[in-house]
Image (cartoon, rainbow, N blue to C red; front, side, top):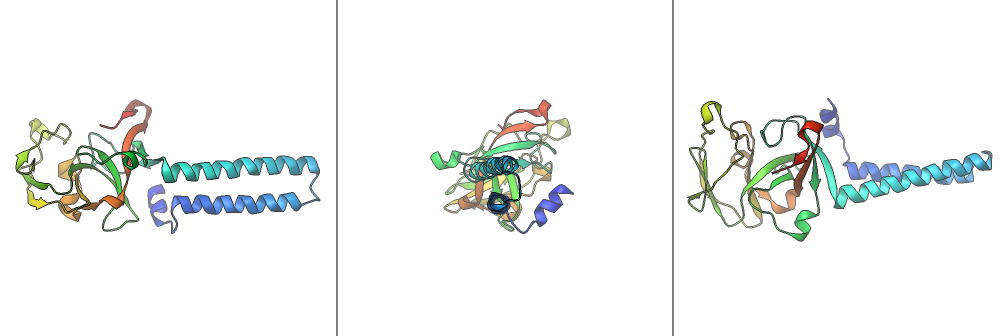
Length: 213
């Protein structure tokens, strides 16, 4: 229910924080001029509002440029990420370095940029990617993967795709749970500019805390 409500919000979280900060600033000005309020109370209220304004602007700065928390609502990245996991995503990692194969990234869904997806980078621009009976081939060579979800008996999810060449400035992504993942096999390549950041840490629930590999 909470996720559905958040998806229907007409404004982004940074926009909501800006509106909140603006409202707090207006309230501060009003309280400052409310001479009917005893000076001691007025000073206390203004100080509280100042702290709230600072917290809101600091949150805006962190969410926009540093790190943001995300909730995992589906099993498409199992076993790496499980339903109910909460992760921290670094927004500055790719400002100082490039995206690498194997990175788990959060990105704006190409068919609806208002939604955020989390998947693993499998092929980079300029590479030719193919899935042959579930085995990923890059430039016609199979790659070694440890993370796809194994089926009962140890078999891998068999699927076929391509071969397709990844266009310049785009990525090919897959879910670790290959049999239950909507990914580049279905919605196509992900433009670099859609990438929000790199998944770094699972911080909740406590028993799942650790780095995202």
